[in-house]
Length: 335
Image (cartoon, rainbow, N blue to C red; front, side, top):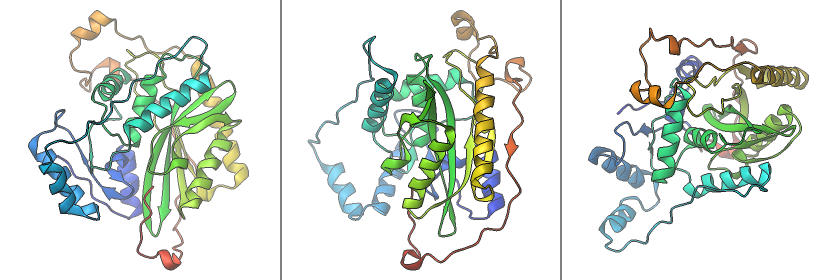
């Protein structure tokens, strides 16, 4: 098991972001990823109980009470949403969000499903299927993969990753949702501790409107939104060997004026539209897919040599001004 360490130094943050490891920090607090599959092994199980003992007000007493109980109530298992042909796109998205919410946010200190961002889409879809079978609590990155899987049969809905980096009291915090676009309107699917940092109905006219709505939510928790990263549209082919492009545009929100931010987001919207018309790499047939073995391929495999559009950073770094946090000093508001 690998435990990520927290480091508030900007260079270390950027290094972790480039390695795709921001999911190893939950509101600035390190957490574990279950790399041993399910059911979890004894070591992982005991570590989760120790986490409960540390963070819960009644700690060890609560853990002891639950573990010694002989007749615990059964937890209801959410059902994957199904639709009638007449169900509208907004109604379908709301049903998917309801399902994600019913799985609940994972507070155990261990992410149950290992998500490697550089894996092909077909492998991530397999993980999403496992999530629906196990019906365990999830974190924000898992919710994005699940949202992609549950919207794959909705060709009129385009999906793209939308991630945020915020700052509070000198520490950085990371979050990601699945942006959606349909019928000329933007919205989002996801999960968070905070109600206004996950689902957004399909009612935002522009990508700028959607991003500003998240920024307002962050301000409500005394967080300053520092950076927004936006990926490209994700293929609807569940057998695609493409990798998700997580960071097509990287925008330093605190360095850009509102007009500059609007232009960057409009440019990104145009880039996403252009991708729709481009043919995707050929996907393996089911028989060939079964014979290919593990979706993790060697570095010399031609299937992994998929070109990536050059990322566009939006300015150089600058030293952040540390502002006093008044009576909130020493208290971390995790989002």
